[in-house]
Amino acid sequence: MALRLVLLGPPGVGKGTVAKMLAGTLGLPHVSTGDLFREAVAGGTRLGGLAKGYMDRGELVPDELVIKMLLERFGELGDGGFILDGFPRTLPQAKALDEALSDNELSLDRAVYFEAAEDVIIDRLSGRRICRNCGAIYHVRNMRPAVEGVCDECGGELYQRSDDRPEAIKVRLKEHAKRAGPLLDYYASRGLLVKVGAEADAETTLARLEAALGLGEPA
Ligand code: AP5
Image (cartoon, rainbow, N blue to C red; front, side):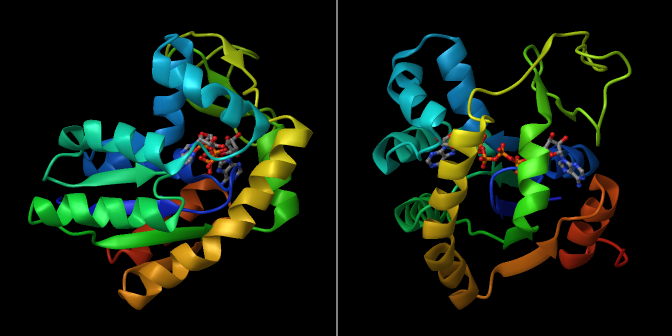
């Protein structure tokens, strides 16, 4: 299905978890700018070196770096649809995406904003574990692997992200609060914004998202 989506929302609300599920169901590419930066850091690339300090502190990577990285990978998004997770996060990023789409005679179908209370978010971030090998996402209580510390999907080692420490979480939540309003206004004014409650379990949140996109029954 040729659906072009951006997933917005506070850190830890569950964008990546639901994006992977929806991408699997619809057969769409899922592109997370956070994952791209983490790959660049792990690979020791120049981009990774430039982004690492911002990420560790919980700050946003400067627009020019993020936009350049995304536009270089624009071809991977494909004209058959995509799910962008964690991009855009600022108005210049949203405008750059719209321009790139319009240059290719494409446009966005929906901007989805996931909502959850701050205590839910902090609990999700504090307990998150990620597979070092395949990037699968777990939680020490909510979404546990069968064997502690080991990825169910590939047997890789699970680790805690360096920005899931309390000091960095605080900065990330502040960054989000500062930027979200103008971004939501931008998409609302284009009639593209849908809001989805994300406090329930991941399956319920996915069902709510599908219903909001007109793909299924409300959960
Ligand atoms: P990024 O990786 O995008 O981080 P984020 O937006 O802060 O989002 P998260 O990945 O933390 O959370 P998520 O919403 O995907 O939650 P998840 O599904 O993992 O970015 C990292 C950094 O890169 C940024 O801080 C910035 O420095 C840089 N960056 C990236 N993009 C950028 C951009 N566009 N501009 C500038 N800088 C950029 O779930 C969280 C936890 O909750 C998991 O443990 C999961 O198992 C659990 N969980 C998920 N859903 C549920 C549920 N429904 N019920 C119970 N538990 C759940």
